Image (cartoon, rainbow, N blue to C red; front, side, top):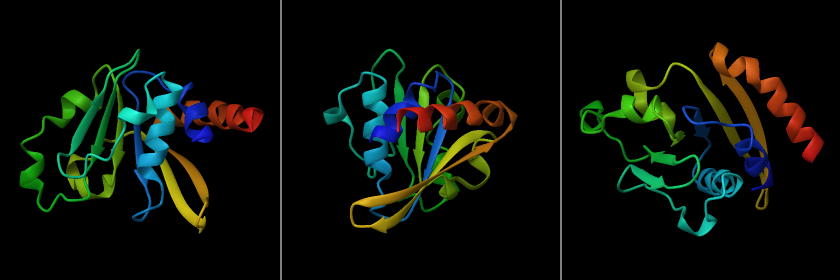
Amino acid sequence: MNVAKTLARQLRGGDIVCLVGELGAGKTTFTKGLAQGLNIKESVVNSPTFIFMNYYKGKCPIYHFDFYRIQKNAELATIDLEDYFYGEGLCVIEWPQRLGEAAPEEYFQVTLEHKSENERKIIFTALGRKYQDRLMKIKENLVKEK
């Protein structure tokens, strides 16, 4: 949660964060931390597994996607992803690997791996120049606030 809160302070509207990890890795918990960092109540954040997207209103709104249950690309056609991916809010995507060709070209990837029941290894990756230029500053801030 603390790492996510710190990261949130470095993000801005129009950014995309893709969360990768197995079931139970902490993707939704990480999203709760992002929300807290953007002054959105953690209690409103829950996994949109069955509806694909939740919207959390704040100074920077969050569009929280969960594509775990996507079976076919045709299901994605019912959602105008471009409007969300490249709009004013922060896009948080769980299970981005299910998007296939509909995946954004540039984004921050946060990979969550189990170390133990209560510990996670968090790996940050920047895909695309927009995010590569900012990743070092984000990592510096994460180290400072640790």
